[in-house]
Image (cartoon, rainbow, N blue to C red):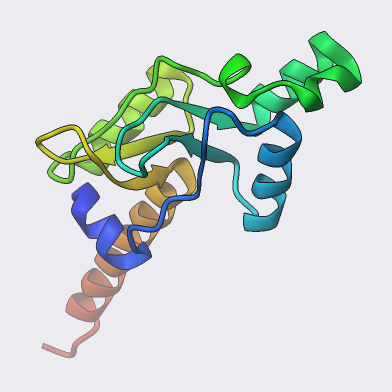
Length: 145
């Protein structure tokens, strides 16, 4: 299965935040959307970074309450791995495991963000794929040939 299939099912909406937003604003957005990461961008297509729940918690652990007033730019991850619509789920799982990341922005040929895939999205689609395969095999075996 390809990343394009995941995006076709889940949609291309990506929750974003500007780099000038406070960590408190980012934490509120994460909670409001019920997600684990926000893409940091000024224009909605150029990726400046990624701020995750982990980034927020590490900032609070290091700086205490003062972290909430810091700008997202001070705590975000700037080395953001991306993927393409024609990448396979297997390749995403490998990258996510090796790089210890849970979110990969999807970019087009011009490196413009067109979506976001999480480890949950990949697992869901892999489980769906396995269930379909199992059903097809079951139907074949018990079709009463």
